[in-house]
View 1 (tube, rainbow, N blue to C red):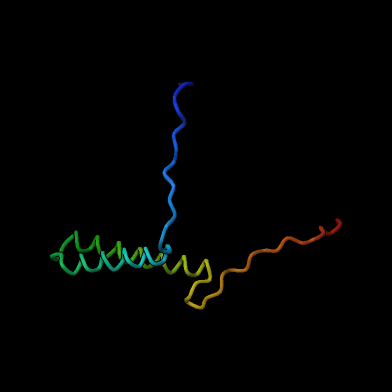
View 2 (tube, rainbow, N blue to C red; view 1 turned 90 degrees about the horizontal axis):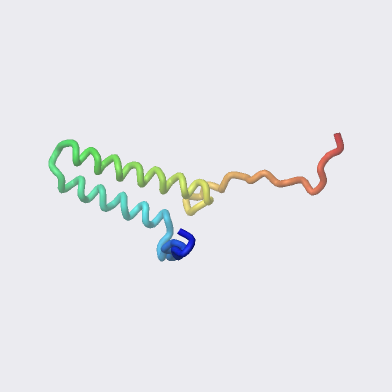
Amino acid sequence: MENEPKKRRRRFKQTTSLADRLRTAADMARERAEEAAEGVQREVLLRKALAAENVAQLESFLTGGPAGIPAPARAKRPSKLPKV
């Protein structure tokens, strides 16, 4: 075990934002759901699309994205702690 090389993580930078990738996934799931027959598979695809849209909205809210909703205020650390 000591002589084995250390495992390396595969790292790469995303070329598109998380919101764009989520919206693309939602669009693709909706398109596939339209082509699918009524049934369980269609419902699963529609739920995936809805989940991806919800996560995109949440990510936009948390980062203060283009939706115009400001990011939540972060608590500022006081420069000096009050004396007790």
